[in-house]
Length: 329
Image (cartoon, rainbow, N blue to C red):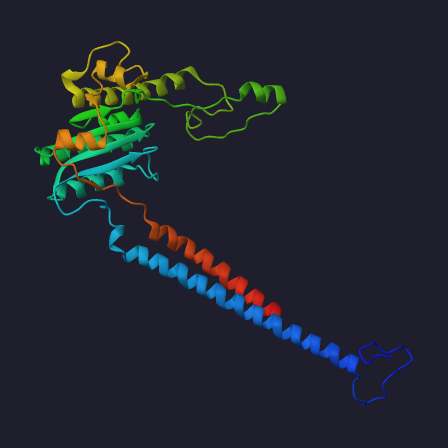
């Protein structure tokens, strides 16, 4: 029988006898496998720690990197400041009033800025956020009367977006841009009929007769509907007043102008909602006289976002590292 073959059931080594070659082979394999697994565990442990350090280093680099400031893409000479108003204009979104106003002030305070272009591509947003930016632009115009502020529409400038654009000295579009939607909306759903069919009863306790205003599970009360309509009409009139203030006599009076309709860029020119055709570069060259562009759009706070993730990631990495170490040690 070969030395590497397992012993038969009848071949028992006496107590204290040397292990057979087969038993030594098994022990060696077990020890080698244990050593190999410990090496793997150490490698994983080191790898996770290095990944965490790299992640932390990236966060610190982005926090202190001078390129993370709001201005990018411009040299030291005279330039046109570009501020992007992209997406929904709302608190917490990229296009929020605080970020836009901060960018406007930074651009205006830069002595090399010869003019500002608001690059608009937005479906609108909340009336309050749009009104904040509108008033900030009007105030900026008073403080810097010689600083031109232009709005350039790419694809879409509707509702609250046009509210902001109306504050600019001039508005430029592409013939295929969509402009307008000067109106206010409050929407929702009603499930009263569906609840009746399903036999579901709504139970809502309130302190205040109208606390459950426009509750989707209850029938709309005529008095509440009339009250909400009054509120919307008041906000609509503020919107109309802002557009009239910004556009002045350039507006062509039309019964549908403030009805909430949207128009193509070419129609908007005819209605006086905008002043002509152009893109950011052509407006910078022809209207402002500074072809060099500098992006003053407020960048997202990547350090804050990364720091929030670092805690979670670090905990996960340390847990996995400890788990692997505990398993393979």
